[in-house]
Amino acid sequence: MFFPRKFRKLFSLLALLLWVHLDACMMYAATSQRANSLAAIKLTPSSSSENREVGKLFDRNTETAYDPAVPAFIDISFDSPQSISEIRIYGPASYLLTVQEQVNGQWFAVESLTDVDLSIQEEQWQSYACEPALEAADALRLQLVPTAEAGNEQGIREIEFWSPGQHEPVRSGMELHSLLDQGVTVEQSRQYQ
Image (cartoon, rainbow, N blue to C red):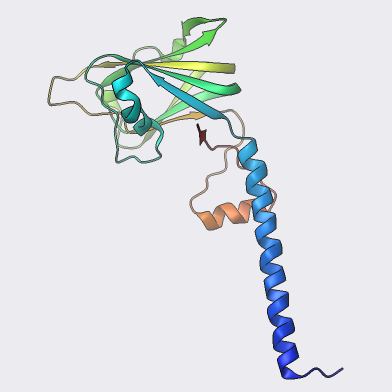
């Protein structure tokens, strides 16, 4: 069957647009489903003047730092119970960290994460295991106690909470698209309120 050249070009353009539309719909559905499965968190610093600064702990930017000059508490409330097997912190910081879990309205220290000296850490991500793993954490409290003398402090640049299970490293947006096309679920993400 012979089609005029204009019709073939128009048909090819329509087929390309349909393919792009279907691909975009599939990506939207995959990201919508993924976004609905992420845990939202609410941050509550011990002082209202730190509201803007505490976000630097979770902004995915290792160039910014949270550096309170006095001991600080940061309450982290999850929208649903979360399993947490480790906490990752980027780079050294002039603080002692204690992590507490809230159980029935009371705060209890996580034994393996009590008075962790962050100043001896290297300039990379460091993992600290929760022993035993927190199975259904609704809220965590980070207690930060400065250890450096004035003018010599290093702030905490980034904190991540990790759940048990398989972790897929994703280095680029193209790699994420590739994993989604293969049906791999990437659950190691955050959604903020």
